[in-house]
Length: 309
Image (tube, rainbow, N blue to C red):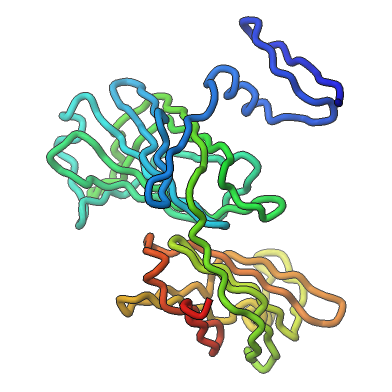
């Protein structure tokens, strides 16, 4: 067994850490002063955190549900106000939504967050509770996914942008809670290996995956671009070269006939010595769907049915 180092914290608490492993100080302090992460019960593939709640200045934030896949997650919170008057006079958009500009932040241990969206709305105008949903792309160092990892939520301000152009603060305080990212991975890996062309270059589709939250596509193209210059110095020609490499269209089609354009998804490109480039694209949808309602993914001119998986 390896040696252990005891970190002594205020109040006499200690945490044993293996020598050679440098923990995130915030993680250590959170584990000591915040206790173990709330357990998450699985109900119909959706995780229901148990006891993941924090109250500050008369406002209680509770993690109600978590869902996800290999590359993305969605967490739903309730925000309950002890004083219903705090929500009086608020003008909601169509569908009961609000333009959220607060500072809610969720970090998953051992993962890097990518792009995503946050939606604040009122599911029931008759109560004193708002709903907040965070949908975010995520990447782990070994692509192992985030199921079973600890999520840490923090927020100090709940603020909206009103129709009159002014910011309105609904609440301030300190809301910190943590829970397990326990959910059924809805990722569906589709058949790959198809060939197509883009902008005159041969393309091989290496991998395609969809889920209730997003889509991921990897492909290799027989083309490379020059390294782009500093911002402000990029020529139109260089941008066209870049688009000819990473701009392969990706369209997701749903059962109701609507589509989602993932062509401009967050991505990366790796050049190879044989003159080819491997491109990876990943993004979340602008909605959360039932994985069974995804009909197909079209990469370039190749349509890949989900039922072929």
